[in-house]
Image 1: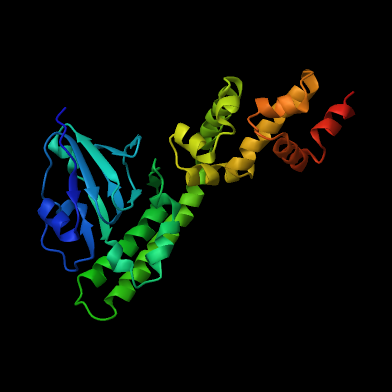
Image 2: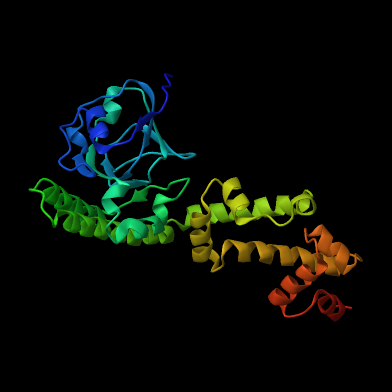
Length: 306
C-alpha cells in the first residue's frame, strides 16, 4: 500500500484547487456535487486534514474511509460530519472507488463568526465523535436532506449580497437540526450495536474492578472508559441515557456499589478496608456515595443482613 503524508488544506480555495474544481464563489463556504470533482487520487491511502467543517451526503462510494479509529463504508444515503483539523483517510485500490455521487458542504469557521451558529455548531455531538458513526438515511430523509443541499447551492450560485450569509446560515442550521433528529432516530433503531457497546462496558468495568486498578488508580473516569471503548464521552453518555437512563458516571457508580455490597456481605473486611479496595482515599467519601445510592450507610447495610 502506498501511504502519503497528510495533505493539510487550510482554505476552501485550496480545497477546490486540490480537487481540480473551479474557484469557489465564496471564500468561506462552498457546496459541491461529488460527481463534479475531476481529480482522481492515486491508488493507496490518502490522508487529509481540513481547517473547516465538512458535511457530506455520499452515495455509491466504494473506497474505504477512516475517521478517528473507525472504518466504515458508504452506501445509499449516508451522511458524514467532520470538524476542523480532524484526520480523514481514504484507501482505494482502483480509480473507480472515488467515482461517487452526492453533495459536499464546506464551511470555514470564520463564516460563522457573526452568526448564531458560531457556538451552536459545537453542541452538535456528531461533529465531536472521535469515532464517528455515519448517519444512515431513509429514502424520505435523504430526499429532505438533498433538498436543503440544493437550496444552499442555489443561494451559493446566486449573486452575493448582504443577505447571502443569513440565508445560507439558516439553511445550514436547518440541515444540522434535521441531522440531529435523524441521529436520535438512529440511536433508537440501532439498539443492537448499542447493547454490544454496553456489554463491552460491563466487561471493561468488571476487569478493571478485579485486576487491582481500583487500588492503584482509583475510580475509572468517564474519559478513561470512553477511550477504552474507542468512542467519545458524549457518544457514550447519549448511548447510556438511551439504554439505561443513566449518565456514564452514574453507571460506573452503580456497578461499584454492587461490588461494595458483595464485599460487605461476603467478607469480614472493615468498611475502611473495603473503601480502600474500591479506590477511595477517604472512607467518608465511600460512605457518602454508598448512602446516596442505597439510602443506608455501609454499616447499616451490613447490619441489616446479620
